[in-house]
Length: 219
Ligand SMILES: CCCCCCCCCCCC(=O)SCCNC(=O)CCNC(=O)[C@H](O)C(C)(C)COP(=O)(O)OP(=O)(O)OC[C@H]1O[C@@H](n2cnc3c(N)ncnc32)[C@H](O)[C@@H]1OP(=O)(O)O
Image (cartoon, rainbow, N blue to C red; front, side, top):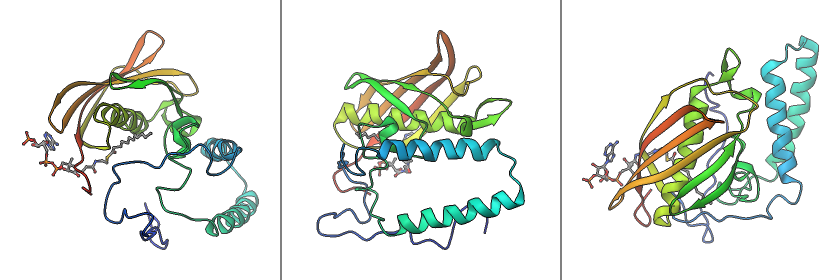
């Protein structure tokens, strides 16, 4: 098996309280409570673990030991799996990147119909090569924060139709960067979104994207 796990049950069926099956919910059930007060520390430990894995050259014995520890952690989490809408990872709006472990951690400093401004710091595990960020992770940050600008503009969830990132200069790791996104033009359900990523005064990348506002109940 390469590239994706095929032996996992990822699908959690909808219930009456969570009638989302087959769809992309129009609202996100955000929270500052699920997972408890130390949930952010858990996410941070996971990110730190990924940083270490990216740069470690472990002995085979240490690999055996860590696999065994991870199997124990995974068995613990197997007992508390829920659906994507109620998992704190992605819905904890009080945490960087809503506690979403898959996103580069960002902190929104301003957001509204006019756009979003956030600080973002690519972690050591976001390495592309030669000590700088992988372009795909830069695109991920733009997708999420571009999508957020679109969502705030229409007060509803939007989907990416296209996303063009121009890489203007290298994007450093472990450095607070400034990411801005805004809706430049709206044409009914089409939101033309622009964005920039800066390291101080230096432009690292910019964004040209189209997001489509979903119709109610649209998958
Ligand atoms: C606190 C919480 C924060 C919440 C913040 C959370 C932010 C998360 C953001 C993450 C966003 C994602 O990654 S979403 C995942 C990545 N994206 C996807 O998987 C999308 C896959 N594609 C689709 O599902 C679909 O193609 C859609 C939804 C994009 C569009 O389908 P549709 O709804 O049926 O609409 P459709 O009629 O086709 O298109 C509507 C209009 O847009 C135009 N259009 C559509 N696609 C394109 C295109 N690629 N390039 C040009 N134009 C296009 C059409 O010509 C049409 O124009 P006209 O004839 O009207 O003029």
